[in-house]
Every structure is written in C-alpha cells, then in structure tokens.
Length: 155
Length: 110
Image (tube, rainbow over the protein chains, first blue to last red):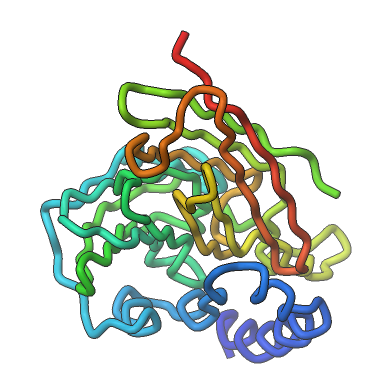
C-alpha cells in the first residue's frame, strides 16, 4: 500500500467526517456555486475536465502563463498566473500534475473581467503545470514545466 | 477570527486592477506536526469579489494554494460603473465554514 492509497482510504474518510461536522452545508449556502469536491480530488487533467462537466481539453496557443517561473526555489510558494486570449473565456483553472490532487484553483471569470488571473500555489515536486480554460462551453489548456528545488508539501 | 485581508484596488484607464493578500494557514491535511500527527486540513475553498453589487471574480480553491494566498485580477469599469472611491469587497469561506469579508476603496493611480 503506497502513500497515496493510505491517504485515500484513511484521510478520505476523516476529511468527509470533518466536512460533515464542520458544517459544509453553511459553506454551500454561502457561496454561489457548491465547491466542486470531485474536481479537487482527482489526479489528472482529463479527470478534472470530466469533473467539471466537460469531455476533453485541447491544447491551445492562445493561453499563456504569466509570472510562472522555469525554476521555483521554494515549492511552497510558486507564483502562477495565466491569461487567455480565447473569446468567451468563462473560467481559468490552475493544475499541478504531480501534486497529490491535480487541481489547485479554479477561477470563474464573469463578463467584464479580464481573462487573466494570478495567484501562488504549492508544488510537491518538479511537475507540469496546466492552465485549463473553459471558453464557450469547451475546454482548452496550456502546459509548462516548473522545476522545483525544494518541495512544498512539508512532512 | 483571522487577520484582515490586504486589498488594493487601483483605477488604471478603463480597468480596475485588484490585488489581494489574505491571511490564512492553508493547511493541506497532508503535513504532520512534530509529534507525527497529521495536521487537519484548513484551507480557503471559495473566494468572491464584488464591486457595486456585481460579482467581478469568483474562485474555488483547493489546499494546493499557498499559505497567505495572493490574488490579482482586473475588471472593466464599463461593466460595473466603478469609479474612484467605490468599494471592492472580497469574501472567502474556508473548509471549516469560517468566513471573512474585507473591502477597499478604489484609488486613483499615484
């Protein structure tokens, strides 16, 4: 049994119990959309796309990274930004392929807001970083490798 | 209650440039403390920003967002009627149901 399996079985049920006791219901009612639990639990780009209700994503040159370094010295704080030139961009998500769960953050872009966001994420190790864009109901992505010299997951 | 967010909203031509720094542990639930016990997950799950009653950004986050998260984005003046002095309100809710809301007035560039 590897580490991932242990986390999935023991950690998973603990997390569920915690979520239930901590009143996840209030979170749901407070936010416009319910937190997409499935999307944050899966491991790959395709699984995330499916969890968001899409079929598959195609690579696009109209998505570019801003701020994302080629080499990150500290995996705990990796600046990542993405901008989309695809018309009708509805959302931008940041995924780190080799993290315990791929999806880091998902931003919904209302009309009138630039399809450009930037934030900072944790990376456990050198990995491909994806920017996943939903535009006009379809999914597109761009990929960039970020080398990490010091992991960001601690423990 | 956690520390206030630091929000800067600046008018740049026909856009408002917003930068937010939140104070949050963002525990993944994977880390162990010095006794080898797993530190329970505690992270922001949803974020939303509004201006003049209109949502200008909403986000769902997982535990992989860094501790003390930052966020930067821009929205158009045209869609919100935003002008200097109007308030940008940012709100987050974490996985324990804790929430925090802070606001900042839009400033003119210096």
